[in-house]
Image 1 (cartoon, rainbow, N blue to C red):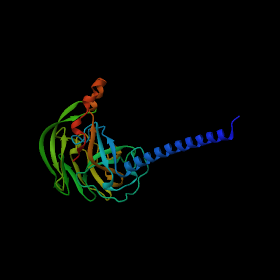
Image 2 (cartoon, one colour; image 1 turned 45 degrees about the vertical axis):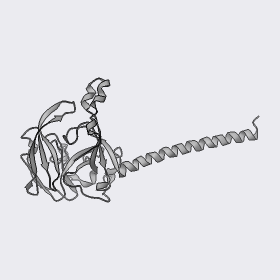
Image 3 (cartoon, rainbow, N blue to C red; image 1 turned 45 degrees about the horizontal axis):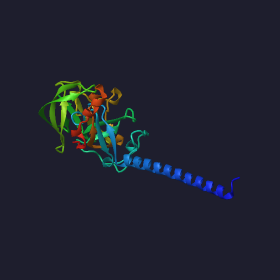
Image 4 (cartoon, helix red, strand yellow; image 1 turned 120 degrees about the vertical axis):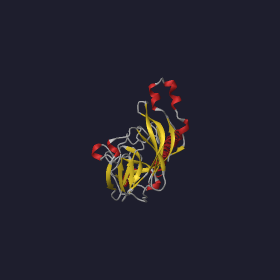
Length: 262
């Protein structure tokens, strides 16, 4: 027969075990909340699956999007959380040339990355592949040739140009062919609360040149911004996935780890 003392010991052990489990659960919840807050308010990593931003961003890059520069909306929530659009608080507009991550207006569960070319009120046009902003053609200086990488790991030669946007921001773009349907666009005025964005791989980018109904971005609502791309934190050559698994470490692009994005 169990004595009252034994019953008390068992009860104490049970209470202690319950408190231990409770503390462990609270610790886990606390860690999850801290991660959620950090990913919402500070920065969040994203993976680059396509070549639309080459050569600035390569397929297989892991980039870091800093969220506080443009303020916050429901688009700022971690990528796996999809809520209807909301107004932005503490909002600031990007600058010409910023590389931005945003929720695609056609499906807010998708996150895309492009470069800001035009701001609200700007008049943007294209003529033979050259961007014209407020009537002034942007600088476009030949810079030799480069290689465009496809998702299957194959590479195609492309002409490189250094593009200079208002404010003196310079970046490299690719042109696969001299003449493409998207090389010309009539002047359009960017409406309030919207941006004009483009990919640096100009002949392989569905961006603001392409209407939303046709699978592009159209005029991007500022409230869909997630953050500004400031750095590549890691990179792996996806072409290696077709090679034997023991060779995969060779696909790490160590030179791209922790590099700034311009």
